[in-house]
Length: 221
Figure 1 (cartoon, rainbow, N blue to C red):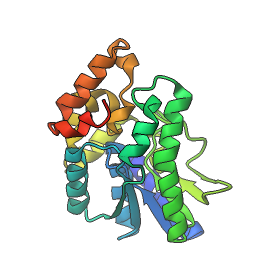
Figure 2 (tube, rainbow, N blue to C red):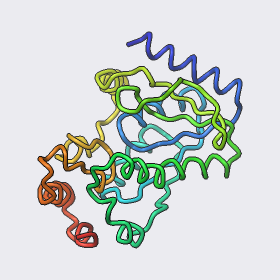
Figure 3 (spheres, rainbow, N blue to C red):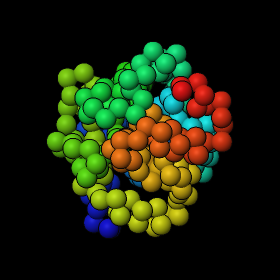
């Protein structure tokens, strides 16, 4: 574990010294929290952006509370409106990989790209594990978004939770819900029917049981 942490810190130091000002894509999920915590330890007060479109209201409150505890400099963006999702209802509970990938691109990737441009960042730090999201290298240049650095690229999920225990980081609320057990920190519309025998009613049941805010789910039914 200490070897993984040391490798990640060396990578962050290298990216910072080589590519200058940075920005962090902070999702508020377990991977993003670990990445943000490590980067902020090396580059105090580094700007971070969190895309909160279609998160549960309780989820947003919890993410902000953890960010405050860890003293992270986070800007929150709700870039997609309810109207957008109502016009793109094919995104809700989509099983098609291309469609799910598109929703991630429209929501998260566009947000960090825009934020990095706003603050003139040369490198962005993202908490992505190879286990979950294939990343070709730990550090590489992109044509449109400068350098991308993935300090936890080679980590497994159990390493993430070990890090939480090591630094006594509060476990995000979402992982105690039925939604979080299968979908992690993703927005409600990312619930994948393949995990629930392709039962759409079950998907809506998970959403409604996770958030007591009834008006929240009524908007998209």
